[in-house]
Amino acid sequence: MKTIKVSFLAAAVLLLFSCKKETGNSNTIQSSGTLNQSVAAQLRWQGVFISENGLPPSRNVQDKIFIKDGAARIYSEAISIDENNHYSTRIRLVIPTSVMISGDSLNLEAGVKNPANSTFYDPSFGRDVTLYLQGATNAAYINNTATTNVDPSAPKRAAIKLGQTVRNNLSFMQYNFEEYGTFILQTFNRGVVAYRNNEYLGGLGYGDEPVIGKLKEIGITFKGSGYIDYIKLYNSATGKLLLSEDFNTDGKSTIIINP
Image 1: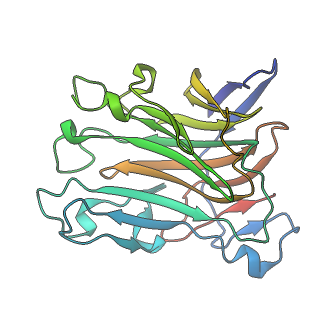
Image 2: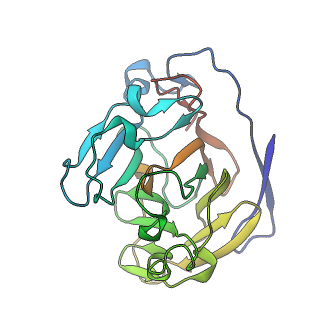
């Protein structure tokens, strides 16, 4: 059992987030009953292989390939990749238009790791872990990079970003995810905030940026072939669990949603 305590920005409340890997017996998406089955059936994790040099070219990857053994991972062994290709991978979820979730009151929480041996290329070329939210009117992300002694070019990419506004060269956004840890992107009270494990890291105010608006997409991007243990989406104002996925059923998205 892993328990995460999160302090909300500009609020004196604490929420307890916990996750537990359990053996799933459902091969279909579950909903609270507020969504009809045709809408729920649209909710499937999508994989993306992002090529740096085109060998092979970027392409989409089906969930039957990247969900297995209790994790989501687009592993290099599944794709014939040139040894000089410092590729990235992404696991994303497009939210159906009929599902109403505000992108400005969210906790996107994930159990992740991206160790030095996660892919064939040297970690000095990056082991980034990026969480992002895409809304109708704006987007936000937090990017964790490896430490400088592992990746000398990492500091500039260690960032929190909202729209065109970015804070980078953030030492607190450098950490080696050699083992599973919790990474959280929070939007709350017109701010974007990053948490790692039990620790508040830092944030970025909206300033003159437009709000994120209705949520359209969530995702995690890795430099290389990082692992996702679970994903949870909460309302950061109320603590309500909106969506969860434990990746326990090989080859299938088994999303539980309650927007």
